[in-house]
Length: 169
Length: 326
Image (cartoon, rainbow over all chains, first blue to last red; front, side, top):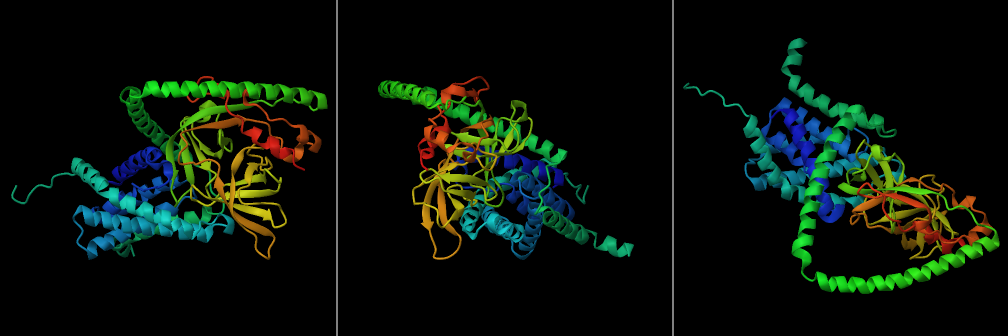
């Protein structure tokens, strides 16, 4: 998958997510629909395309998060690498496997974000570990909805995939 | 060397993509940089999508409420009529109280102009209460409607937050529940000062810099003091809960239940101009006599729909009782 499509998909997903969350709890819970895109890149894209695509998705997340730039980009590339390793070690084909790996990845992504933000923030603005509960719920919801993103990404990949000429042609 | 680079180019690229953003993050963590032109362009792209989805869902809900939900409308109309009658009586009483207030104020010689307060009505089109980032909501009004950074955002119940970033057509509001948000407040009952800081969770804030010697109790109402230069004084912020006064240290600790449930807010008011006087600027004697400011007096509202709307409840009235305290 070309990085630009990953970028466009992430931009669309974060917009849809922000609009939908207004009606679904008004922000009482959150989710991260762009993270399944990174996991998808980790499992199914090439090394270069995937890494650049993950960085592009991370840039979108950085913009939406509103915090100091670079944090989400770093974590997205790290999640890409983690997904790639998990994909190599485990056989992940179905939706359930994708959902589980996305949920775990989203949780680790959230914990990483909290820890890194804590490391650089003044004591009074540092995020507390009380937010871990919200991160966990966020990860579970993201995992639960990730099969839908997987479906969309497969469609998108199908639209732009070029048929390789067979050996017998 | 070139051969080595070619051989490991993928690995080098991935390492660069990991190291560079981390470097940028650590470099900008203490002093966050402004959004670039590219950032603003990309953010502006998300606005129309959020608005379109919002309109679609709102339209569907309104259609449902208008047509399908008409069952029982007659009974509801009757109940509302009763309520309107009761409210009219209340209004008459309030008008009488206001007139009396005006008379007393004139008598005391502390009559002062009610300052102009201009607000822009806006609808929330996007919610980003992500524990990993800032607690933001996106409004459908931006620089074109006069919204600018640091403007206070309120509803009738109290403070929602302040404008954090603006594009031409949308603006992001940093909610009071964000951990970077700190609001100067006073206890309405005792006039003790403190700060309210967000925790990152939408339903809890915490009290900071509340001196141990200050008179505070669980359930005390906190209102803005106006000393932070962002919020006008007298807006409700929240209620003290779980007050802990330890045996040592300068400060007492407490949680704050926000006056506004940010997860349930749909429309807000952005205060584009208001009286910037702080509590300190109000002479004590005047404070004793300061009446509740009524909303209708001098509040100009640009409605959510863009036109002039009716008066809004003035959160400033909450301080009236409090200012009478020494």
